[in-house]
View 1 (cartoon, rainbow, N blue to C red):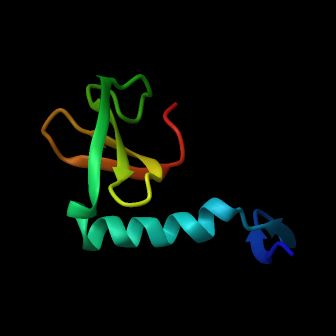
View 2: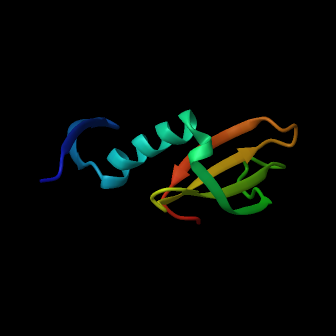
View 3: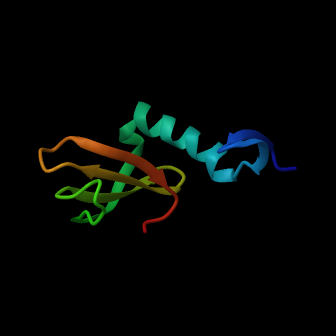
Length: 96
């Protein structure tokens, strides 16, 4: 049975949203990745310039990692500024 989360949303008192399996599984995967980066190998890297106004002049990098033992893959998406600072970091199940 899926878990129902109650999350406040813009102006509405409350609404129901289903938690995805990626949220439950992915958060644990990210914890493992940060604690033991050697348990993963980098499969591919995609790099391109940013297109949004907010990140103008930056670099958009998507790194695809695979767990060495299980073969589970995920994407680490990082946006760097032109000075090299990390502006945004997120994790996904697939590359966009």
